[in-house]
Length: 116
Image (cartoon, rainbow, N blue to C red; front, side):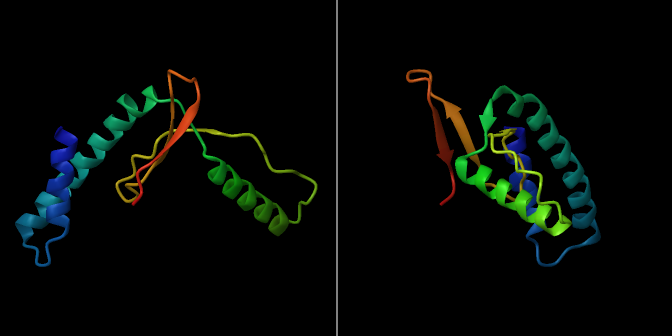
């Protein structure tokens, strides 16, 4: 709950159009605390979920690797075609996330996309 409150507080301060010395020092302190809270969230919460890349993420990564190999002049190496395990993205600048959750009834992975 503290992370949610600090996110709203940081956002309100960051959106101010006219800052004072006091608001800037408060924003600086809050940014440091917010970063610490995000890292704590990542370490405690995100490690509890087993996630994998979505097929479109795997395809995009493979395309990037192929382009990088072609740019480097190495056409003999092939891109890694298997899905890579990933951690959920707690990045505050990218609130949408694509996380696959294991359905305990069917044993299947289902994609949860929160983008609108």
